[in-house]
Image 1: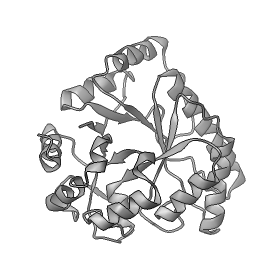
Image 2 (image 1 turned 90 degrees about the vertical axis):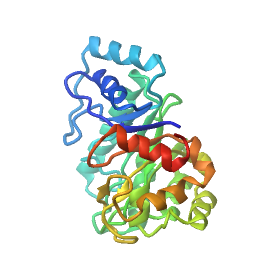
Image 3 (image 1 turned 180 degrees about the vertical axis):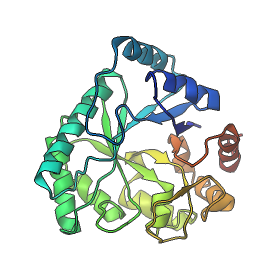
Image 4 (image 1 turned 135 degrees about the vertical axis):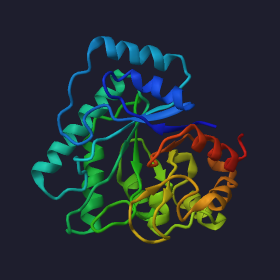
Amino acid sequence: MRLGYHVSAAQSIDLAFDRALALGCNTMQIFISNPRGWEIKEIPKEAKEAFIAKSKTGEVSPVVAHMPYLPNLSSTNESTYSKSIENLNKTLSLCSELSIKYLVTHLGSHLGKGTEIGIRNVVNAINKAKIGDEVTLLLENTSGSKNSVGSTLEELAAIREGSDKKIGFCLDTCHLYAAGYDITKKEVLEEIDRKLGFKDVYLFHLNDSKFQLGSHLDRHENIGRGYIGKEGFSRFFSYRKILAKPFIMETPQESSEELLLVKQLSGNH
């Protein structure tokens, strides 16, 4: 089972591997630039080489990068939209330099102009992006908060259909639950498989939810402590098709105990 956390890449980007391994992770997610800014700074040559060397050991694989928070690929604001596409291209390029295979992106907000326009803007941004064979862009589902794009399976499928690039999905369990998809039920997982196809789901963000089913609130909780709960995750993992996927947690407190709990719930201890 590929199981890990979103870990810090502070001080030197290669230290993310050390932090992941210290927790007991065999996969991880990182930010490769300031998550709350637009600027993408050049990574020092030594740090870049150390990162690539550590990635080649295969101890932590796959390594996943996450886009910063400011880019908005659904935006109807021209300036924000063009900056967002520029940031996406720079991040894809940096992923390629670092031999990172997957880049997760949020889909953003249509700013009240309607889901249809938001989807059109995301599709246009993806089609303009310089996506090659080295890096796969993964679209992350949202919790369904006001004006957000990508909270339904239909919206995600529409973006895939409209795009002329090879893209995939990163499904967040908290976001699915908050959007009204009860992932503890087999029929809901079958619906996801039917509408998206688990072959195109490359990654799961594994998070419990602080709020109830259909709340539309994106509030992560540690596994087993939220509304999905231990029993819910146990039922989720019983859908065997998903077990081959990497699972990355973005929970409030990281611990090797939580990794062990997930392994127990999934039958991989």
